Length: 449
Ligand code: NDP
Image (cartoon, rainbow, N blue to C red; front, side, top):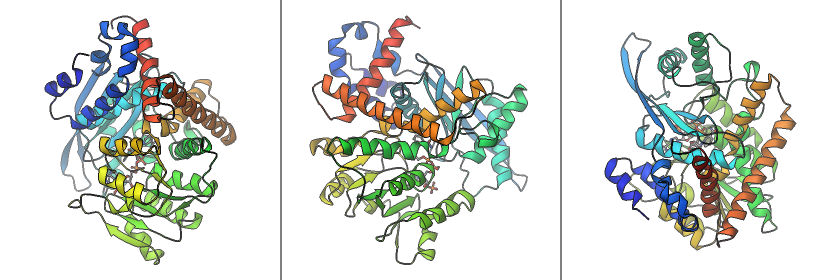
């Protein structure tokens, strides 16, 4: 195999997260390349790792004191072989080309697994919405869209939310797109219900992740009932992961944000979850405030000098990392295994480092990679696009049922691919291979473009 990784590393040496995501996929698909020499002849790896288009732009905006600021905006249009580019926008100070290229690359395979016709993309900005007023966020979103609108459209590229981009930001972005284009169209997903959104879209990633976990457990004739679960994050994905775990009889004992985490041995019940939703979605507060209300819980501040994250060092059956990339390292993986965890389901994108994944696979844990387990969000975004095209709204039950069918189908696809390539039950290999094969076959059909 031409050492594509070395080429990529030499070309963009600082893009560590992108190298990590590419490495994971390329290692997994080696047997596919051996079986299909035509992939190499058509430089499929070189093509699939190079974005079709990268858009980078200046985003000037004014704060409430009249002071001007400039952030950097991005859109990575990674691959459109099976449909228009689709993927979220992330607003977070850590955003750079490497993080967005890794997310866009993962998105290509994730979208392929959903069975819907969606290519892969990702975008965002190093703007930090935390601590900004609604008016500041609106001015930023308007300025961001004043450039982005040239590059997106309902049949070209359909952005959605991600970290730091929720219903408020999607509203401001959509409003500006509509004004500039003078058309009301399904160009963004994650819209509010009253003007084109889909029921169950807010819940979809978290619910889908738990549906996937339940499918994995069912292969061992087990289920979520009575399982103690560690969940990280306290945003969209984490909140609805907790909600579905509660529906299925699980007990959740942790939640976090970038400042620290809470451990509630008694379990986060529905009332406590409602409190967290209000705290995070309305007051935009910090998870630390949880212990002011529920004093039996403990709060631990984040400490970047530690070689592990103590959140992952509690007795539990299942772990649902749902905050951000690389939040579980090798040491955390050892702690999880020592504490009895038998299932790790990635709600976030690439939350486990390669060392952590190796430990889980060595120990034959039920380990679900994000591109399979968190695909429920983009799947319901696809359903939102379908409803927008038909100018119809499906009921909650209808969307939820479709989501469950899609998650079951992704689970089965991963199992089938892992068995076909000699490692049955390895969801990591299965997801990478199944997504890859679907995309590269479409690329081959469409010629050298
Ligand atoms: P939100 O912005 O709603 O929540 C993110 C949560 O993660 C917050 O609690 C945030 O804390 C925490 N967090 C963010 N960055 C860090 C960090 N560097 N260290 C520690 N904690 C951090 O985002 P989502 O819930 O939408 O996204 C969470 C993950 O799920 C991401 O990896 C995203 O890519 C992935 N995902 C999301 C989908 C969706 O539909 N929303 C779909 C598929 C994947 P704080 O408030 O302090 O920033």
